[in-house]
Length: 207
Picture (cartoon, rainbow, N blue to C red):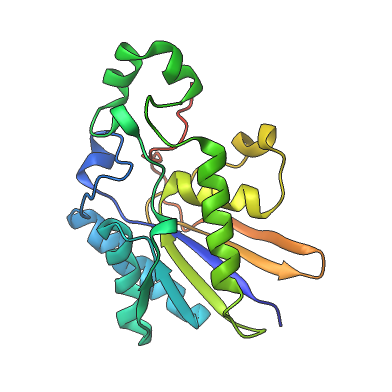
């Protein structure tokens, strides 16, 4: 058996619906998000997780807690799993961002925000740190955020930075599964549990 990591994105928030950059702003799940978290928990419980950790932001923590309650596990909190900081863009819509910072919008680099390589590194390091606490057949669920998880997965897999955009985003309460093999981590599933609806995230826009 191999150690596995399930990377679970949080449920929907009002700012997701309004296409606002959330970043480090602590926005709660809305009613739809709470229902999504419950649905994801009911599906992921069958994988028999042995450990759960979440971002310190409540939209991710509440998503993790829904699973924790169902499977009888405590949910640890690690700030290193929080979303990419959005600097001056937090709370703004994509239309407001593109109008105010057209060049930065194309590069998806917020003034005062967190650089992409820094996010990828902190999330990947945290994944390795928590995976090291697992038994050989353990399964860790990380409840986190769209951009943070995509970047952390790409870094953990050792993809060169120019290929990171090739890894698509995660829908609300969708997940990816990583497994540790003899030659490192590999991606078994990506964006599983997706419903036929658009992905609303702080991640790079489709432009």
